[in-house]
Length: 410
Image (cartoon, helix red, strand yellow):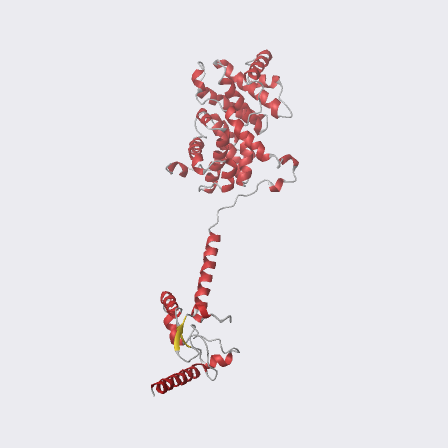
């Protein structure tokens, strides 16, 4: 009797489970694992061709979507075991992960929304990262690829060689201490006068910078008396013209400019002495060489170019600027000119790349140029100001100096 009663309980259990399955999924029972995505509604089953595909109930979806952490915990609770029946009709629990069916069930609503939101968040982060990109370095040589005079194939090597050689062309910033009869003020008067002479003869810019370079290299090795200092300047300009110019001024013109203070023999003797002193080496890079390259890197206009040359010629006059290498002088002049015209600090990544100087490295030299700019029209040495206060040079001397650079702390 006990065995019969036990069998009756089993049959009643089977009957109860079949009733539950029919009430949940309709006429066709779900023989295996309960889908962890929940129970589907009848009208959704009718619309979908495959009755196996189900969605979560509204109540269950609302509870899970309220908290993503709660959603994950509920999923973990559903994974370990789900009710099912064995071949004898007994109710048992089996692992859902071990009995996965190969059917590709649709992803539940709350999981679809979570994945979509995460994907959209990743896209937003990618857009924000793209917006915060660094300033690109411009290829300044590509427009001149077909210009044989630009030598774009070798220009980088050329300027790498100039950077190595510029240190050899620099003189000691204290060489004037060995001079007994001249000083830095006399040097400034000489160079300010030569800038006017250079403008009167309408010579090339390279000639002026090479003239100043020859003067300093000669004075750093030879002691000169005061009355011969002007002769040294004239001979340095004569040699620079022979090296740079197509049409060279004759010796008689230089004697006439000096108001016949020297004769032809003195000019030729000084020329021979200067060539032996500099060992006939006229190819050292001057600030002009770097000016052209850095102006091209800065993508400047004519105003910036003229103002940059105005500032660097003011620096040529000052003896204290000998402590800076030619490349730093050129970069500082361009940086100061940009600050003067635009009223803000401006030094692009392209300029920094080609000059190898950061904005902080230029500030000391740039501030000194600002002080020279402020007093350019005053005092006795106004040759540079008069030169650049003409229409030929775009009245660059009238530009206001970048006073805000002096107010900035180092």
